[in-house]
Amino acid sequence: MPVTGPSLVSDAGPGPVPATGPNPVPNAGPVPVSAPGFPGVVPRPGDDAPAVDLLGSPGDWAPVVTSLGSFGLLPVRLERDLVLLAQWMNDPAVAAFWELAGPPSVTAAHLREQLDGDGRSVPCLGVLDGTPMSYWEIYRADLDPLARHYPARPHDTGVHLLVGGVADRGRGVGTTLLRAVADLILDNRPQCPRVIAEPDLRNTPSVSAFLSAGFRFHAEVDLPDKRAALMVRDRALRNLL
Image (cartoon, rainbow, N blue to C red; front, side, top):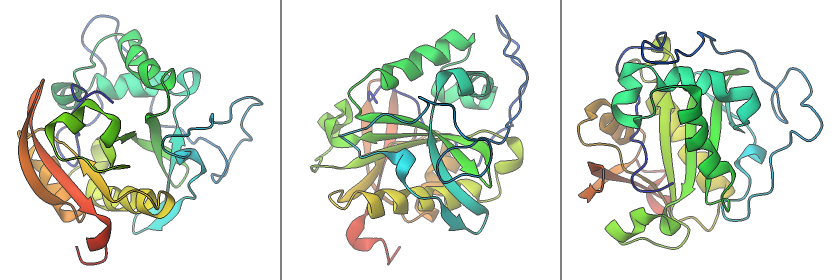
């Protein structure tokens, strides 16, 4: 993802609300989804995630058991997921950092930039016990413009997170899932030395969630659209923090 992309929203703010701006998004709540590793309806033919060379294939990473339940990543499909994601993006608490409020076409353009790219950023739904409840972007931080702003190492892997529902914010859900996804990255990408994040410094609940999830504060960095806290989870320290 470009360094001018969204900031993480985690464990803070109100939950999804009906869009009040132009072209309101239908109020479609999370529904169970299915894919390899998840129970439910068999995916349609041709709906398999494409091969991703730069990151591996996050959709193939086996779900993990957390204190919240079984959690895994499901690569985004526009035709299946756009209504839900656009609704989340129109939540004022989310829009303040992601800046993708508006009609579904705004969210679609953001997703297509990744889906039509070379695989260096993969948008995913976070699926907890069969229900999508968060949005993730897993990206190669060392190949991103972010690398101009810190001493990147080969295969550094970045994360963005959006927790979609009000019931899942403010009670440690973001912390638990951040730790789980960082572990998924380190377990499935043995060449990755560190997991990187760059939440907006103003988003103090997000920064706190990263710290509680085993990330350390590395530096403040001035990015084109924000002043960010560069957060790092080191492979070498994963069992210590």
